[in-house]
Image 1: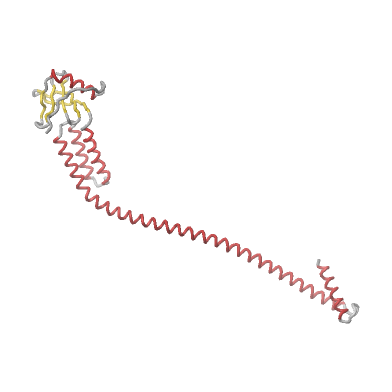
Image 2 (image 1 turned 180 degrees about the vertical axis):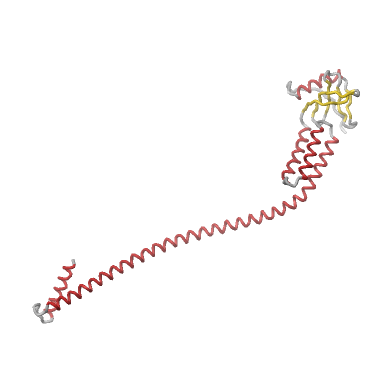
Length: 259
């Protein structure tokens, strides 16, 4: 390829010599070589320049490509930053709500503490005035409530839950049938009897031999004897129903008159 370029240059030099009135022979070999060398040098220089241009173009293309990639990354970061700002704004708003809720909770807790105390005191008075069933168990529940309310390690919500739980237990007592054994005084002697409770409507007992039957008079706060021939079988049936020995059915129990 280089020889063809040199030949082309030489041919053009011969043509130039003819045009100038010189014969090819009259041109010295040194001059020809000098001209050829100069042409080759210019060709090499042009080739080197072209390589530099190509290198610069390639480098420029790489830089442009990298710049475009960086622009895409920047656009992505802008979108991410906008989303992040929105999240931060939402979190700040939530923090404000939490701060307000904490402040309000502190106020509510200060108000609810005396309310719980009054609820427990009212429950205690109610139990003492109510018909005396499971009395020790119910008193113990109230005593535990007082301990829980006074315990600084128990959170307010748990204290309130325990109070409502005790109220719910007392509420359920008003609508269920229950039987258990207890010691009472009959004719001056301590004797174990079977207690039958129907809600808070009637509380009766029956001795093991069925001879002694009585109903609790809550106004007089004592047991009133019942006619065994009239109520013995009814009470016995109620005791069997309460202990699930027989299926529920209608039976008669004495009740206190409504106040």
